[in-house]
Length: 349
Ligand SMILES: *Cc1c(COP(=O)(O)O)cnc(C)c1O
Image 1 (cartoon, rainbow, N blue to C red):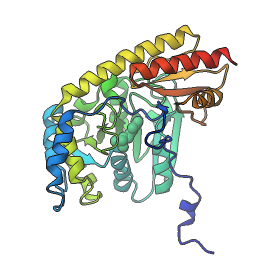
Image 2: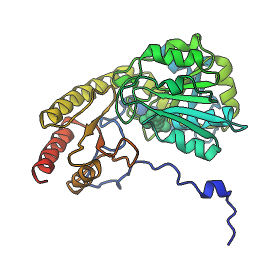
Image 3: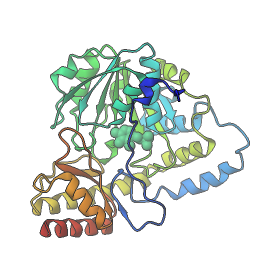
């Protein structure tokens, strides 16, 4: 039977999210960079209050979230766009900047959703690889509707230096997206640059440092003119009343987030040094995960051996990444069990 779906879309494989085991499964989940600690207790109280007003549509621009984000980050509410996760804001960038086709650019390895969205939009991809965080020359000189910089980077954990981010913003003709999903875990932010560069969009999410991956709240920061254009192409009510209440409460309690982040960073440093002591190469990470190079065993073999021991990490079957796995930082207890499993895998090969 003839399909009703466009042939270009039928030819795509789509984004592959990390596996989500069913609730109650006895698995240590270190594969999607979630925060192992719960969100601020203020969030639960805010949800309860919002439930009573669910018969009403939410504020279209999430004004309460915008005001709190503006206060916390030292910008104006007009500088803030609130999305159904930062993934939605990434999709809005394609809608707004690639409406007539074109091309996008990014350095690899990076967050694979940029490519998936480019395929869906039917735009060309210019890519250049970097394994140390220096922006490749090919990227600096590229003409692209959108250039993506993910810093701290996933999956390798390095930062892109602030001055290199600024040179990209200065030279780019198109939109420059700085994806700072992990910045609270040790990166330096490009937020101060939005006042100087009208083509710069800084993306944050409450999914990682604020422990709210399930609530779907992302933030975009840019000059008001750019925020206004992106807001034109979003769904009118893109963030639910419940999510807005959650976001407002979390942004009012940044100390809770900072405490959890401090714990994750301390655990990350312990895990990195113990893995190095076992002979694995682990690059410095500014995020809530580490890259573990296990070239002698192979990334897939380590992923599978850990999985058999009830521990899920992320293996990427992608160029330059098959020699290692990405390990999200869980609680101290989780990571002690992870390290014991790695020692066991190394011994039994
Ligand atoms: C997790 C992540 C996102 C997505 O964040 P959501 O707000 O949960 O959609 C975006 N970019 C990068 C690099 C991420 O790791």
